[in-house]
Length: 256
Image 1 (cartoon, rainbow, N blue to C red):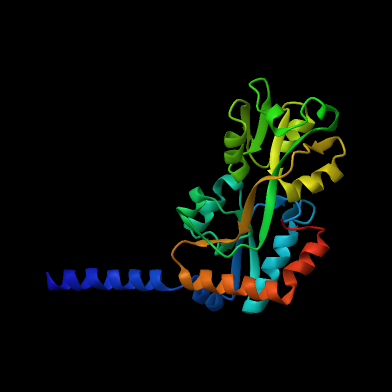
Image 2 (cartoon, helix red, strand yellow; image 1 turned 180 degrees about the vertical axis):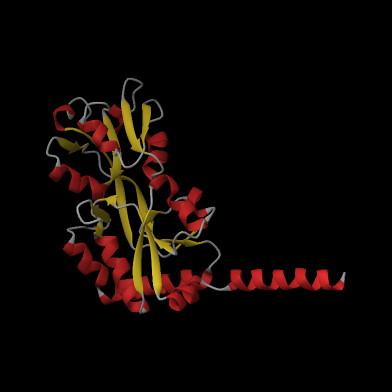
């Protein structure tokens, strides 16, 4: 009986010790920073199908974080619908930027914010007269496409309660539905929209102003204060040094 109690206590001690170890300790011990990223959000994280390598604003951020930690970086493929689950399942130590939402914050931790953007709709340029405002898209005859698992999927329900919402599963994207004529519009971040209208001149931003500013941050395991504090302080130092300002200039971005 005593032996059984001792074994149980030993297991509890080992489990508690493992849980108490911060990601910061594990990362330094393993010499590797595992980063979850979708690779489909221009200009934050884009995966080149020819080389399978990642590039973008967030990729530069994570490379810099790994360099300052003195470890290698490993980018782990993720999808929007499961990016939060990747943190809770310990598939990676941190994610590239995602929008901070109450729903995500229930199960994941968020670092300090380092970028703020607006939400905007995209339609075909030839349809701008038909859809000149946000309100014109809030119609039961209108189809709004969103990408499954993104914060914009939730925003669409809020902004367009009368419209028919169509969630598209990655690797397909919502704006492709607009290009193909299967949807009247989609909503996305202002930073992605500004890139898309250059890449696809047939698309246009509905000129109604960016609504509901959203805040980008990295996701980390919930409850790991040591790791969260380390990254959040690192972000503030890099903001003070001008690192993020340099990246914004490099990718032609401007935070709200």
